[in-house]
Every structure is written in structure tokens, then in C-alpha cells.
Length: 289
Ligand code: G3H
Ligand code: ZN
Image 1 (tube, rainbow, N blue to C red):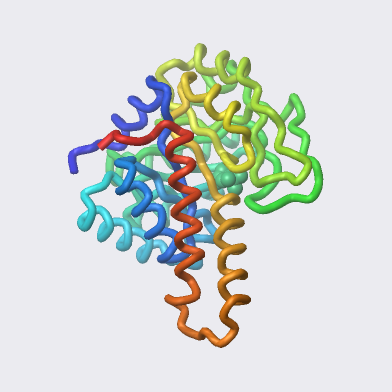
Image 2: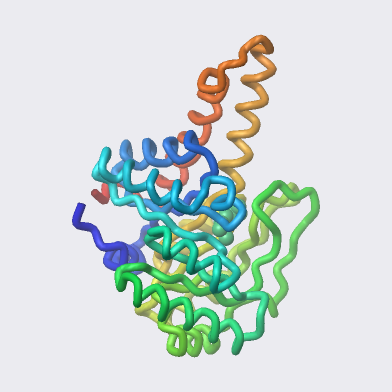
């Protein structure tokens, strides 16, 4: 496997497709993602948030990814998703993660720059190939189903000027931006993406691969509209969690006597694989390897 993550992201940012980024916290969901990607010939990110990594184990996650790579030859990259402190980012880097997202978006711009720069310096000192994602803008919600409507306010959004300053002063490899996206799926409908804002950011920092968080619940039309403007990877978590949990509940209800986990988990894993396949097609991330 001779794919460099940096080159893959750069290429994706310059062409109208984006790599998928799918979160996992079970062996079955990770396998579902890998099988979907193998079938569709898609390089991919798999990610663990701090909570997911705590459950799986940082070393375990890194080991599982290297086994999948060896077995399939697929470019599968492990990202530490939304890591909120230098220490947790360092834990992921030391465990062998390929990529880390340092998320200090709750801090002031200056503090965000300071911690993000420190993570870039540390990561590159360990391995120059590690990709570091920084983030700017306030993303509302969380990776679950929300009953209420979630509105994105103008002050939540990333501005082109701050984006330029941020990437210049931190040296991050890619940038997560807010342009209407939220985490999770709202029963009242997710907000629309502000494609004009995305275009302005892309025109201001054309060489920086951009990341779209909160890929669940966004209309297909908006996703397709975003692909040509620097978009390099799109994160999806809630939709996988939802179909997985629904399928698992149905499976347990269907055969109440069943106590063998690999039997009652099968349909949930398959549901996860199907949604990942749908997203890969939507992101146009197929037939790339
Ligand atoms: O970092 C993870 C993602 O941004 C997932 O967002 O749960 O809305 O799909 P989502
Ligand atoms: Zn996210």
C-alpha cells in the first residue's frame, strides 16, 4: 500500500469527491466499514472520539487498523476524532494513530492556535506523515437523534479571514469548518449548508483540504454541492449509530431466546455496512484504489 494520507487528502480536496470518515466503537462496525470500502474500492478514515477510544482502547484501535490494512491492502487510516486536549491527542499519536483532530473550538482563537500548533509540532516530531486537523467555528449538537430544531447562528460559522490566519499560524494539514453543519440528526430537519461561505473559505485557502463534520442528516443535494470546494473528508457517525441500534433491537425482539452475540449482532453489522456504502457513493469516493 503506497498511498500517503497527505496525497489522498490533497487529491480529494482538488476533485469533486471526499473520503468518508466513519466512527466506530465495536469490532463489528469497524469490519462493516472496511468491507464496504473494500467492495467499493474506497480509501477511508475510521475514527474514534475520546469516548469511543476510551471504550475500544487506543492501542487496540491502532492494532486492529494495521491488521485490516495488512489483510485487505486498503488505505484505511485511523483518526483521533475531536480530541480536546494536548494530552489526549498525544495519547493517540503515541499509540500509532495516523491522524489526529485537535478540537479547541470552544477556546478563544488565540488559545485554539496555541494548542493546535503544539499538537502539530509534537505529531510531526513523532512522524511527519501524521495528518493533523484543526477546527474553527462552533459546531452545535452531538452525534445522536435530536427531537428539537437546531439553528446555526452566523457567529458559529468559520470566517475566511480567521481560517487563513489559523492555518498559517498552526501549520495544520487540514481544517474542519462550520458552514451550516451540526452534529447529529434533527427530527425537525438539519439546517442547510451555506455553500457560498464554503466557496469563500476555499478561495481564501485553496491549498488546504477541508473537513465536513456532522455528515449525518444533511440532504444529498447539499453534500453534492459541497464536494467541489476543497472538501476532502466527510464525517458520519449518527446515521450509523441509528441504523445499527434499530437493527439490533429488531434482531433481539425477533428471537428472544438467542444468546449468541455474533448471531444477534449480524444484522446490525450489515445495516452499518449498507449505510456506509450509501455514503461512499454519495461522496463519490468509489473506484479510487
Ligand atoms: O466527528 C464526527 C462527526 O462529525 C459525525 O457527525 O454524528 O452528525 O454524523 P454526525
Ligand atoms: Zn465531528
